[in-house]
Length: 104
Length: 441
Image (cartoon, rainbow over the protein chains, first blue to last red):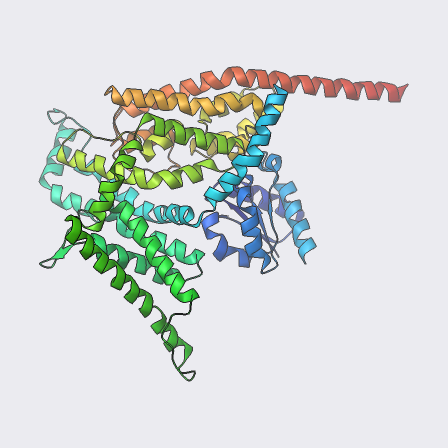
């Protein structure tokens, strides 16, 4: 089971992407748990996931959030702007999986 | 053009991004934002009651349905006011707890405790108690700034005491649970022991209790926040942050919210008193005239994209149009893209500025109904605008005007952008044809 967390200001626009990513994972037959949260929920939620991807609009918080998650060895990265805008679920999923692999 | 753009990008990277990072990650800005977010559901539903208390019909209406509604609201006014009074009317309760909890979480304190501590700190200075009753005068908009200050103060005190291990020391044999139950006693004691005497002192010196004194001090700032320059400045800041790919509305609304709430409750009080509404620039004005379809008022642009000659833009339009109805436009912002796209910079920044001027002027001329109600920002714009103004019709017209304005301003820039995209597509196509020809030879 791959556990991926997406995070943006209120978890609204990333929730659009969650559906696309889940679809992409289903096509490949991958078991995943993908959820979107607002940044205010970051602290309480990130420990339940293997990787956190940020919407590019909150990329400016990357360093702070990544430092927090680093204490538990969970990677945090920003989603590529174009992939985000085009809602490319499969590419973002690939990126998340590559980060999980690199971290474990 | 390109060198101008490059220098703009340089400015954005070197100064705007760090500024946004600093502002957007400021602990207190985050706490205030979270506090308002937590309080919002109570206030939205509470202010929804307004339409029952003040039906959107003129008093001399002859329509029997409207007549019945008006009579009902007059007969049961007090009963109808109760849920409003105990939500909007005491908004500072929810806000103090929300801010205290968020800040507590950021300082690694127990959020329930820090929220309640903030609540008590606020009550202590803002709820004068006599004869078994507390005055509600400062529990609404008039007490907002006090609520911010007391929540920050009490949480800081709690954090400081914990950091410096100022606590009741118990022998090792005492179970940890027991020790923790004593842990919160000292912050409560210190907060009472400092705020209560301070309030008594200020009252003795000035004749005003703390929230009264704070409102008195902030009066110029609060009235400045409701002026055209303030509107334009906050919009400009938001647009430029967003153009740089930073969630600017998050930062700007975080700062504007206390002012909007204070002014909103002043408008509601005026409505209840049957007086002219004093304030123009409130959350409903921002959300439903300036951010139609999301930041940059891109809903009309989404429709234009649907019919674009460029496949890529059509795809973005299809993906973006439905979320745009609910004011979510990240697919368009990042997909078109508008972010860091010099060809769409001008309409993106100027559409909301122009619409702000129009809506402000219309309000000042008395043509546009003012905001009295809180609405969720995800409400489709014309509905939200009407709802915010207690279901008046003029906001719907204003929304349509804003949308037309936005379409007109985006269109020429979109056409130019399309041309440039088609040119590169053609060049690419020619290049591949050229390669294919060489290969086949």
